[in-house]
Image (cartoon, rainbow, N blue to C red; front, side):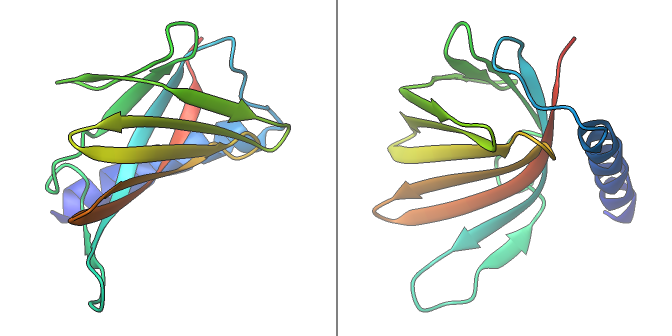
Length: 132
């Protein structure tokens, strides 16, 4: 498990270095996102921390703005709503009986993804970069 953590941190540092070079993520090009950490939360209890892959989330996602899709290794989810400004891009959709929101910081590439249903809440932290 430690080797996976080091790999995840390495990927995050690579993405952060490219985003900190002053780039602003562009919605005319696809993004590649690496999921680094996940939380599984229930009311009145501390959130359980874990590795996204072990909690059922993919290691990597691709966001295709032109097709309005988020593509993972096993499934593709339609983007139902997209809002953007100079600082962030916010996407929303519905999958697996849960609503989801994905927010990407356009300056750092940091991403936060939430999934919420009546019986489950998950939060995923990661980083995105533009695919050339």
